[in-house]
Image (cartoon, rainbow, N blue to C red; front, side, top):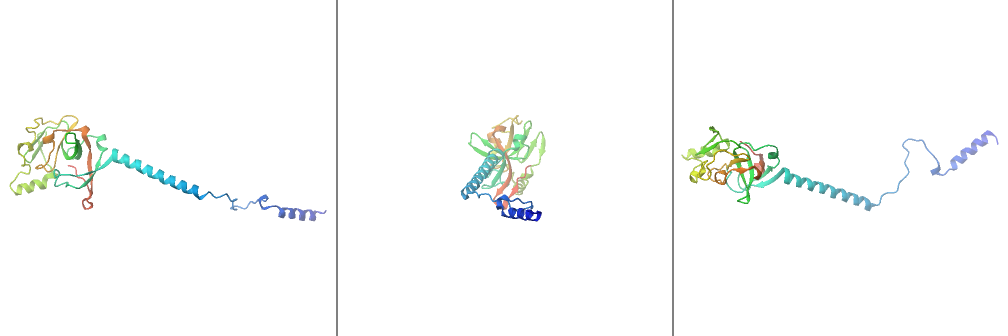
Length: 232
């Protein structure tokens, strides 16, 4: 058999190879087909992913709700005209884990004797000597301006009245209920903005830090009142 015949025979044998026995060096050639996964397995995986995502979301909500932020509803007139009944607030529960409340901040705290939460404004912090008489607030002997009461006081003056005039001497501080005028350590003094109609530290005493829930930071309902809470 001459050389040409041997070459023809080799070509014939190569052409006769089964497709799976042939090799190719062409880039991008189609890979061998793999069996497709059953539809049921894919559905189970998708359901598992959804369940996992929902579980993570639920855990995040619980963490945020119980450790960072919480919604509260204003109930009562004690903080008017700055807060009204039915308004919903976001209360920052973490901030006072990092620092102590400051004067002028609006906070929510629990009152054990009342078995409910109050919303008031911080008037004095530990070590402050407080005197509140008529519409005048003195902190450590200095007259302090309360801008959040400016409108209410001006309206009362226009009528020839004192804004803080309803209820008698107990509306001042100190009073017959509490004759200590210095805020003790681990406590704050808190009054309502509606000094004429507020049950606050003038009646219930100093607020223990352990009872403080957090600082009111956002009014989120009704939507037309959506705003950050003004402190001080």
